[in-house]
Amino acid sequence: MNMNKELKVMIYSALSLLVILLVAINIINLNSSKYINEATISSQRVALNRLKHPNLTRSSEVGKYPQLKKQKKIKLLATKGTHRLYVISDHKVIYIVNAEVNIAPTVTTINAARGEYTFHVNGNNQGISNNWLNFRKLGYIESPYSINNHRVRGNWIKNKYSLPCTIEVSRPDAKWLRQVPKGTAIIVR
Image (cartoon, rainbow, N blue to C red; front, side):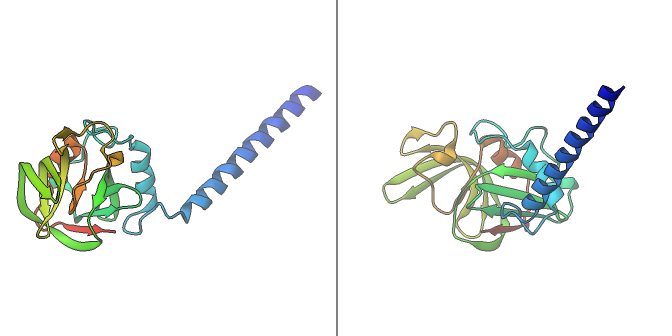
């Protein structure tokens, strides 16, 4: 009987420590700089839990893409430091895209121009990309296909060459993002 009581005390003590640890971790992460102000922290945590490692041939998150036509007040937020493009609807992150952001900070809108292939020339660098979406005068969200006649593969974010004035994303993500409506706000930080 005495052993049973000691076991219960140990279990309650262990559970109490676990709860305290979880609360402390959440409080520390609450003020973390990895969260954006434009969306709720809970929606960001859910999306971050679905996020996969960058791979040019795979979507960025586990599961299906959300239908953009059913969303309200869509906006895009690209951050250089975290290599992410957030798709936000009504202050909730509905999807996070792994992205290489190669454009100066700006606030603009998505144009109607979009297509399957585009060709870039910048000095000695030449690039071919597919599933592009245009913003500003010369800014693109696109998936890199080849740079200087070398096919881009795997984790393109670690590639030493990048195309200026672009936000580079995976092929499936680029194809899905072509559905973003004209006039959608895009913020680059």
